Image (cartoon, rainbow, N blue to C red; front, side, top):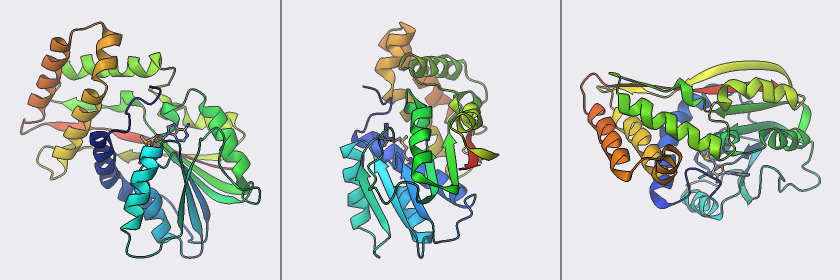
Length: 268
Ligand SMILES: C[S@@+](CC[C@H](N)C(=O)[O-])C[C@H]1O[C@@H](n2cnc3c(N)ncnc32)[C@H](O)[C@@H]1O
């Protein structure tokens, strides 16, 4: 498996909730005019792709997704839309974008969220994205730097499992800290005029969404259980005991989860 999260039903549910927690915060940072020809690469369940489509009055958006399972779910969600959105989902790879010849060099906006951390060659994906864009077009990257993650009150089990989770990324040939390197990657791919920001992802126990943030963390670790056990050379019992400690943390009245996803923009 070369995608750490997989595409099974519980994982799709986690990704769906993650979208609910993040999308408004991302949307408010994108200065859309409404006529952009937009590309969302690694569009997953297409929840944010469709949200962007709602804002595109004269433009349209193409979502590219490699996994047929994610694509199927995206199309299912799309069918439940009340209006006909200017969105199209295509199966294909970030390394070899499924674009028509007239589309190359014509996109005004490219959005790539939580994809580069899963790629062995993120620069190759950015070079493809650049080929798809008009000169002067904007690219927006949102990705993880797993070192940004803190939970309090401090819980040794979190540090232990999170460190192993990052090692799983490295073993797969991926960069768990890619968020901090986004501008360097954009620079290497030939983009200019960089801008950075953070997208808050977190809450205190007394906030209504805290449960979902905590469950997301537990779900990420539980989903990578086999790989964590292997990379850490630990037993399933040790893994379970540490995860139970994190679950215990999530029940504390003063529990907080602090995380921020890295945001980087540039011009083609
Ligand atoms: C963590 S999800 C993020 C989905 C979406 N961008 C979001 O923010 O909700 C990453 C997605 O990238 C897809 N993916 C992984 N490798 C890919 C590749 N080489 N080309 C296109 N999509 C890919 C996965 O199947 C998955 O749906």
